[in-house]
Image 1 (cartoon, helix red, strand yellow):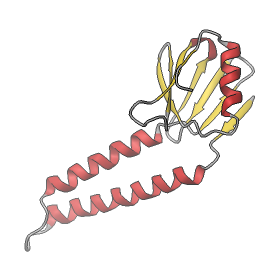
Image 2 (cartoon, one colour; image 1 turned 90 degrees about the horizontal axis):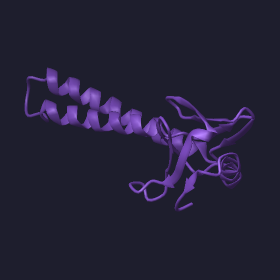
Image 3 (cartoon, helix red, strand yellow; image 1 turned 60 degrees about the horizontal axis):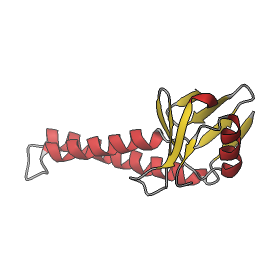
Image 4 (cartoon, one colour; image 1 turned 90 degrees about the vertical axis):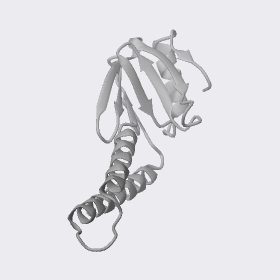
Length: 143
């Protein structure tokens, strides 16, 4: 098994820490706004919307794979902080840069859905070459 890891994992941890601190602040603001009877306070929905936005961002960022494991059995695993996805290499349809993130994230489409992964992996070119060798039908655009 060959493992390709993100070459700057501290950047991801910093993002999680920042979003977690903001989320805790939004929860504290939500409690403060809901329990305060004195003076003008920001309305309850302001903190609720902020908490929702922070939660969605945490969920999206925690779903981006930062490690890829290419197995000898013809499968590839994408490891993200919240989930791990195992895919047969022959089921991969395409690998393209994300239009929304301007190429900062790659999207791998397979028969059962898609996986988002960070292309800043040690040995990324080797990984793409090996995937293409095992499955010549993979569509590569913008890589």
